[in-house]
Structures are given as C-alpha cells and as structure tokens.
Image (cartoon, rainbow, N blue to C red):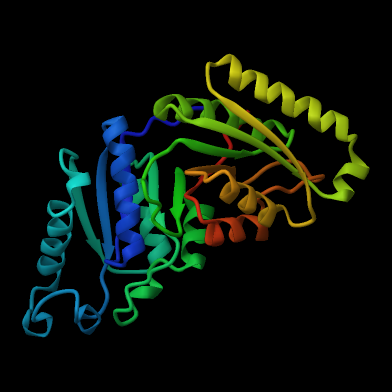
Length: 286
C-alpha cells in the first residue's frame, strides 16, 4: 500500500490549531513536492470581527478572506516555496471538505480536530465530530491534528497493529513514510483479556515479530510493544505519548471481529483526543 502525495487539502478557520495543521501540511509538501489547497468555509460577516480589520465596513467579504489567507502563507517562513491554491465556500463543513477533496483529487487532507480561535462561532468549524465525519467519508487519507508539536518533524511513527490482512496494509505505508523522513516505526499490539482468551497470545506475538522483521528488512529502525489493557484507544495514546511520537497510522475499517481496533468509538476517541497527529487510512480492496 502506498500514498503518493501530490495534492494536500487543508481546511482553515484561522484558529491556532488549523494554522498548526497548515504548518504540518507544509512539512509534508516540502518533502514530497506536493501543492497545498487551503479551504475556508465562510461564516456570517459578524463572525470575522477580530480576524479582519474593519470587517463590518466591507461588502466584499470573500475577497478580504482570500487576502487574509494569502497573508497567513506569506508571513509563515515554513510555507515559502510551496505552491498554494485557495478555495472559499459556503455550506456544511464536513461535506464541503470531502467534496472539495474529491473535486481537486486530493491525495491527503490535513486538518485540526478542534477550533480554538475564540472568535464568534468559528471555533465550531473543526470540532472533533466534524473531523471524524471527514475521516469517515473521505476518499483519501486524512491526518488529524489536535495540537501543534514543536519541533515539527516525523521521526517517531506509531503503528497500532492487529493481525488482520487489512491492517497489515499499514506496514508498507509505515515503511514508506519512515524512509521518507528517516523515522523509527513503533509496532504496538493492544489486546484485551478477552482477546487473549479467544486467540493464543503466542500467535499474536509471532505475527508481530514477522511485521517487525519486515520493517527491519526494509532498512527501517523498529521497536515492538505488546500491551494488555481493556481500553485499546487509551493504551495506544498513552504509548504514543511515552515515545514522543510524531505520527500515528491507523486503519478506519477492518474485517476482524476479535479485535475491533479503531472502529467506531475507538477511532473517534483517538482522532479527537490523541496528542500526536493521526493518519487515518482507508484499506484498499484485496
């Protein structure tokens, strides 16, 4: 499984976290040569007080917003040398993000999970529920960011894994990204006591060792961890924090019933609460 990143879509609401997502997209664009399309969903004019000077006096809000977006890019040294496009639309947030990604054939969406601008209702723009809806409906991979990491880098990648064939697709993707950024991959398996009762723990360890050997064989540094805990989402997030992870790669759907890793409530929790950027990947048909 491979993701060739040529076009990145970044929704912006002028909150700090959305601007952090833009910087993160810039990191990826500088490495891959991708272009970035900035998308802003318009709000009523009164919501821009504090964002746009003398906003109440303008009758050309869209033009003012475009100018503000262009200024954001010009004033950020990390974004220089990248090709940018701008889209300003009206409508339902998650629908417009996914529709725009499809229209522009985006390979990746990078977005914050929580707006925190404190300006009118703009903070509702990238709430966790919207981020999860984008992930659920997107035709491409999505990186969600809850808080901006400093320094911004991709050196430690966490790969939560069970033994289903769909989640195994993540291995090649993790190898690809690790090579791109000279990163280390942390393969982590989380199982509950019930999982271990239903499936031989030694089999899980055997499969995990095979994955670690595959990553090591590709010339990528790898670490391996097995965790037994009832809360899969919490344990993975705690592990990611413990290794100061820069990226977590998860699958958003899978076949297995014995360990529903990152399906439903677990996915929502990780996407909205993880301290590290989370790449949600939809498995390819086999």
